[in-house]
Length: 147
Image (cartoon, rainbow, N blue to C red):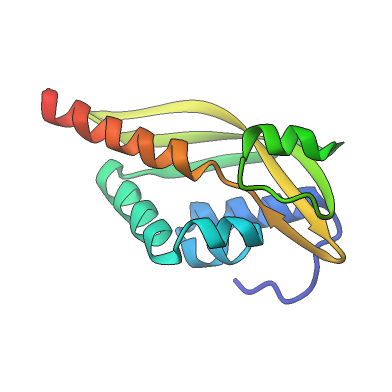
């Protein structure tokens, strides 16, 4: 699934990102990260992290619904992502999905998450809280060892 043209809205861009994410096209997701995030997080680390998590927990994202975008001030983004640089227009969107996973038995849960996106000229970029994600994964691994 290749996207060569710009997106007409933050919502269309976020739907594209989540569609690729759910299909495990992590390289495409990474390619759409905010430029400063790419400087903080190597592509290989991101790809390995996602691949390992999807395999380990047999993750499946379905019923993905992206809410309408709300334009926000840069300060809100900077509060969440210390690596963010003020350049462009910023948006916040709520994404809801059904997450199926296997962690000591098959489970599923409805989840929601706020997503932050920036538009520069005709291009959108997504922010990701990689520090918390990587830390959460280490905590999960510690839990596995303790059970």
